[in-house]
Length: 518
Ligand code: AMP
Picture 1 (tube, helix red, strand yellow):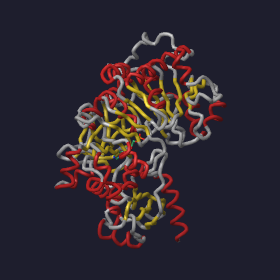
Picture 2 (tube, rainbow, N blue to C red; picture 1 turned 45 degrees about the vertical axis):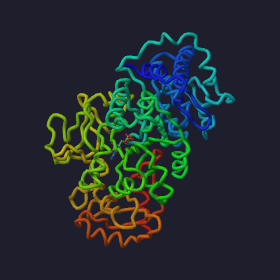
Picture 3 (cartoon, protein in one colour; picture 1 turned 60 degrees about the vertical axis):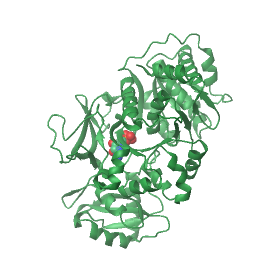
Picture 4 (cartoon, rainbow, N blue to C red; picture 1 turned 90 degrees about the vertical axis):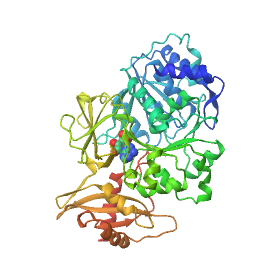
């Protein structure tokens, strides 16, 4: 099966029903398939060779989905740029991957100037843009797209860029086989039958389709669900959109769920209609999981994965959440069990540590990326691939029931007074203090201890917890070497462009707060 097969089969089955929509319009399953194939052919007609890299700079939109499918169908390699990170970061990605074409929405701030500077062929979404042929023109020039050859499973469909250890973006390679493996595991383990039912499923893409939300595009398409693309909505807009679109499914990062929990129960009640609220991308404090279960929906599903090993590698199912909330709290601190195709061990792949012992999470299987673009010339790529095994940089262990627990990333581990302290454990303890909402813990350099644990936290709505209360409470909740030496209340934790807590920015902020207070 290929991605083209998924798109065409969905068109045959669900034809005129709405497949995708955004605030500008809709596409039926038939239109989406025709358009994606026509765009793939149009790119060929434009002289873009199979296997060429195509950089895409689009917001969450119908265009983003059809371009993604078109590139996969045509055998091109997509490298998506995050509109939020701005031109300097876009330039770095372009320098690393040297694309043949750029598909751009010039209405994104800075995008028109960026497109004007590039030497690649430019295709604009907006027909009024002066940048190059528009998507509509591209979709009409194709002479014959029926004969496009099916890309080989091991050929590349995307480069997924994230920060390298020196800040130069690194592009993890993704194959067609990686993506189809994700489709199967998303369908069977994460969505797990929730798309079926008398009422059609409606999936709300509230997070970027270029990241984790995009993993739901193919499984929802395959099942005939409607997909609604939201661009730039805050938590209030998201709640409204669930009601307006009668959404049944969505996927969010934990920081967005934390923002939802700031609303009262009445406002949140519309979210009870969700048949699935998936979350991933970063640890979610256990207290937030409990509250989300009680106040938003019990239909929570957590999954884990990364750019270099396409999610889901593990899944904490809705049934696991139920058991976790009722009588097995330990489950809520885990990322669930490994998906059948993901071979996960801890330590090293040829000599793993026994269950219960902490080691680096190492994964093999169809989810694992073959490597990084330009791997031969770069020394700052961080995660390593050894004999088909990916060393994830995440530390954790497997418990006797097979559930996987992550203790943090190896680079975030704090070594204080010779002890290893995993920020996650300290963060869990602090976030359970009444009135504390979210927290990040980092190690700052310390002449005596090597590193000193410091915390930044936010107060829950209506509460105002002082730093000395956090320190006093920590004394009753944590052994002395794991206690923060300073705790600073902030209005918001710093976030990355993908909505995860930005630990590097938090360390800089805490360094300044600690200096100012001393
Ligand atoms: P990225 O490669 O940007 O998708 O980030 C992947 C990293 O996010 C993983 O290596 C983990 O450190 C973290 N992560 C992803 N999902 C989860 C999860 N469910 N729980 C805890 N951490 C997660």
